[in-house]
Length: 415
Image 1: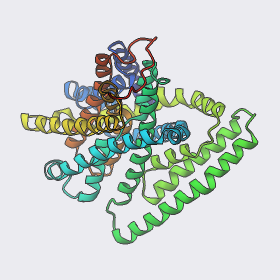
Image 2: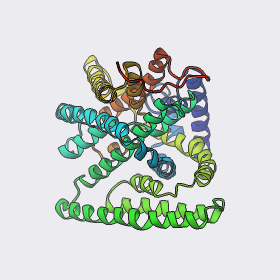
Image 3: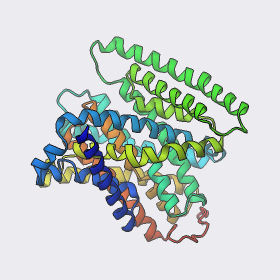
Image 4: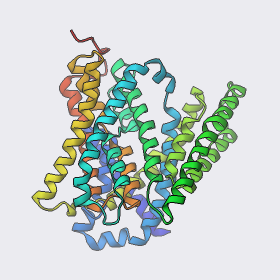
């Protein structure tokens, strides 16, 4: 227990320090937190002070960190799902649908096209081609909704049309990405694959029906009945029980428990007071304690020493290039096609190119499922960091959302 307390102390200290430095440099706090995890992992601490690293983070502690970080991610994905405003998506479904689908499909297609090359050079020997293609396509096409929300909030862009459109597109991307991830997890080979896959699909369909046609209406009924009542501890307890039951159900089916947590968030009643109470009660514990443990665990899996030699770095650049071209290119093309000017189209592409935390979650799922090798995992982590760090400089160069009194930058029609 003493070692665990000491580990958590180190993780929190490094996370807070690196997050503060990132903010001072004009980046989102999550960038510093991710880099902090890498610093205390084998790439930095383990390489330069190996004896101290082995004492502080022995291999036996990894499984405990996995459990703690999974619980934190379950609560985090529940929060993200509970805050998605699908009413706004319906109101502006044309722009959100076209831009989000294009910014998903284009990078997904590029990722699938590049998959045979990466499969040949960097995939584990026993991985099946189809799950590898799906996971890589998802990794290329995802947008980090929570990181994007934090960037927009820090730049006071959440209330202007550009920020609102980016949030809607990211919301659609999140739902699509987690749906594809559920399919990818269901297709992972196991013993007696044919029977197991059939049962997975059937159980997954039954689970989705229960959540959408039983749990969600019950939540809406509960909200109507208690609309004037604050979110009490009893109501919060019932909802958390539902979240963990949903996560356990998807885990038992063979799909990752985070999908169940996210879907439980989508079924959460859209009562503003309840959402604010939920965020205030869970956010501090999740963001300040549990997510830094996930970042530290990701850092322990990131092996920068494996990226040795010009050839490997060229492959890393190739992965970054197709990720940026796919995501930004797809979003810019869709924005221009729907009639917006170049400045705001590029800004929207830069915002949707933000990957960050959600990308790391997907990469960790693929890594733990032995779909990605340590080398490819490290390459994709660097891609997630680079694409997220690009967002702020691009917005600064475009002079969008730089000042607190930023003007209302709606999308002007192209001439």
